[in-house]
Image (tube, rainbow, N blue to C red; front, side, top):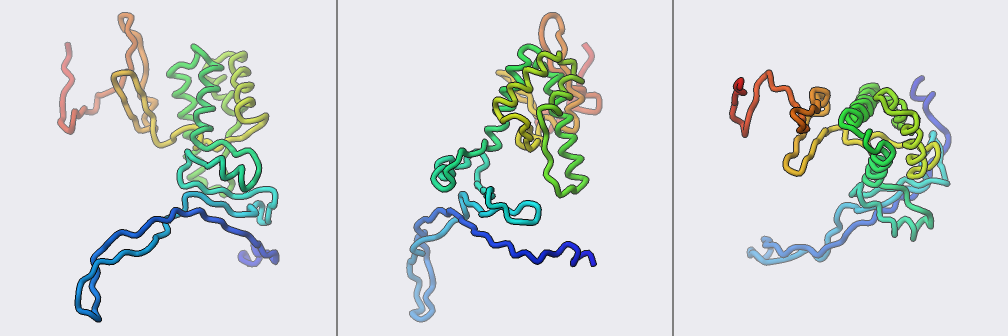
Length: 242
């Protein structure tokens, strides 16, 4: 049957290491039934949830992979390079935050003045759409994206072939030739945010297509349609014709 077809006669043996903080217990008031009295007491030490850890070997393609280990970090922005170097004696991979920063740098420097609102909006929307479709498909294989695929998005957005090639070269420099990234590491699929020195605007990514930029009388504006109602601090307001 289906269960037996998916079974294996190979035993997966592994080691899990968890690094947990230990803190002194707090002084509390407790009731001692034998003495019929309340006394102060404190647990000597308490073990907190893991800050980091790893499983070795990794489990890839239904078998042990002794060349890889699965690393866990409570804070995705801190993967503890010193721990990886001390335990595995290898260069640590980029954290999700570092991947996002490197991707944005590659995009901004390669496109220069062509890194417009419309281009960034298109990149965000199309990568987000891939994330949504992959989640809905329930595909067990992890989703990834390459420089070539991002380059195709840029080309469709009107970016020149020279600048697309410059992006691919910068991407390869940051992540390695042919590297594939987790799309969730390079964009925030749950947020679309615009920031100026004076204003911050957050928009549901599903409706980011409604935003547009325009230059009016020499000034740059971000336009947001408000035909279906507008609230200011929870109060319904109207927009009057001039």
